[in-house]
Image 1 (cartoon, rainbow, N blue to C red):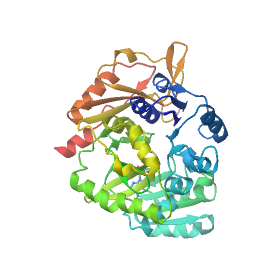
Image 2: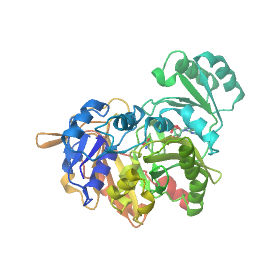
Image 3: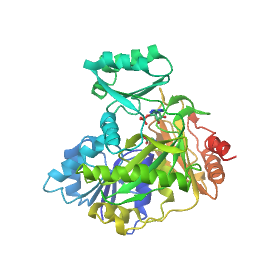
Length: 428
Ligand code: AMP
Ligand code: GLY
């Protein structure tokens, strides 16, 4: 089988690394990929939103399956584009159609969906430019902190949490009347602040049945002790120690099942990953957000724990027979540490040589922002490389990853040294 993956981050390298191990694979292409994906497949210089170019490539190279890494092409309707095209419609696409991608593409849609299907989420109201004054009055009725969310995709920057009522009001005005996030903030969801600890839960579904993948915790802030600016993610661990069997049963019954059933009631045949961004509040799971893809950097700790052939699972998704596939999970713990370029998530440099990759022992290196230039691998993004290790315990997995993270060098390399510390405290 010939497979094309869209994307260029650590998540896509992890997917490519796993797919490469499948005996069902013939050719693996990644567009546009990075220096890491080039070591397991062939990188294709093609934009993830350039549907026509993707079509031409798929047809010219007999691609049988398209795996969509990031959300943008899904929200733009790449799966629908394939379904509507007579030459493409028999090609498998892993990732939902546009209507379902709205679970990530529109916070208002996701909140409506959860309300309709009784899925626990924070109380909320949605406002538009025309109802901004009502939004301002609504803020007056709430207690701090105030949570404001741009409705559409805003590259992870569309959520504002403010302790100050006046600042929240300024933000609401900036979003609704000054188009702070462009069309993404034509609508703004204002919601109740939830206090708890977050985790990420993933399923793979064919629209009817689903497989629960290993859960993970992602570290979002740049600074140790969860301080400073939000990033794309500074690392992840899997499994999450506080996601006990009892808690995961609640997640399955109160969140996963109603979501799958709800999609099906809406007439949507969802094929792909669903990422549940959850928060544990008083022992119960509550949905913070849906994403319609794997997480990044969660994929870098989750995928290495899947023992089953991932192409088998994807084929089950495509032909609606996922029910017949089994998923075997590695019981070991996994830890992915993200090495980032100094300055990230603000200004940072690209193009610095990376060394030490040949010194890594007992870890997997997943490339994120890297590029091959002649015989040198150089930095090409803020998040540069994830170092993933498996171990008998979270501590052991972290120790191996840290030992190896230390061996990799590039100008102004930075990583958080406190991953897992919050969970160790909870455990003790
Ligand atoms: P989102 O893009 O919806 O995942 O929001 C980004 C981050 O903001 C989440 O990962 C949470 O850390 C935080 N957040 C979002 N909504 C809430 C909420 N209602 N209460 C507390 N924190 C939230
Ligand atoms: N790690 C969070 C995300 O992928 O959105």
